[in-house]
Image (cartoon, rainbow over the protein chains, first blue to last red):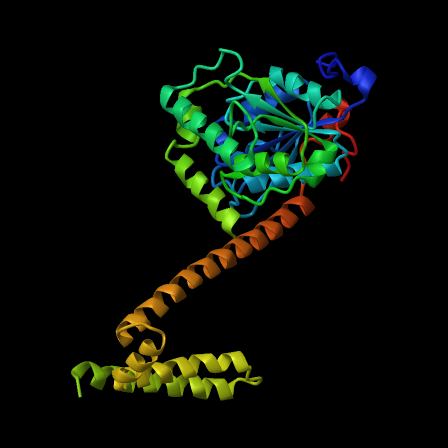
Length: 236
Length: 126
């Protein structure tokens, strides 16, 4: 355990990484997800986004920072809170990680590496770069439409949008200000990548589609709502 | 007089009086607050003498007074929608900032001893 607790690059780069997890009503899985991340030696900050189940209590026995939104503010808001806390802990790289078990903790190192080595300011996971994610067809269609939409609204070329697996350099995290509190934060982040001209890269990640994560995840119908929110925000 | 006028004019006048009284009851009347009683008064006048709105409409190149009122309402409605959308986003942002502040100031680290074991988290102190 002790040996695993030191990621490879740590010895020469002295980079401090903090993994931020926003959780809303994830009591069933949050314990396992957090334990898996801890087992790989990463410090964890969990933001309980006003869950009405036992999510917050499940974290009590774990060596993590736990923060609680007293009312639900949405994933974007919760991530922003967690990132803020990670920065106050002195993080040099901040990773965002989904609470529902979709992401693979062993890939955190892959997404941290390009940021820690200074190759880019923001690394974003993409489920379309290797063929390992079994993306349901309906979801595939919606995500690819999202890619096109992002291209039109921000001018950024990505292969995946709204993938919650990301890494930010300290400088980027400090300037990041997610104002789209709810699900549209994926577009919000990409927009800021474009605005601040951050160097970004996409890293192949595997998304595990389990019955649980599909049920908990976004309904495809939300995509339209997100698009409308993004456009409304531009008119504000 | 039409039935509608019999109902609408007294109602508009009552609302005019009520908002005017409230204006003067307030400890510091503001000029902008005059708009409310004036609007009710204008509504009463418009119902009482529809030909007056038609005159105004014709000045603007619109045929009927009713059309003028309709157009004005459509514009006002759109303006109100945008205004309230903006307001509500602003309010949401403020709530989020409050909730975030509470979350950050009450952050707790579970199992302190485990954290020092890890030796990973920088500045992990309460």
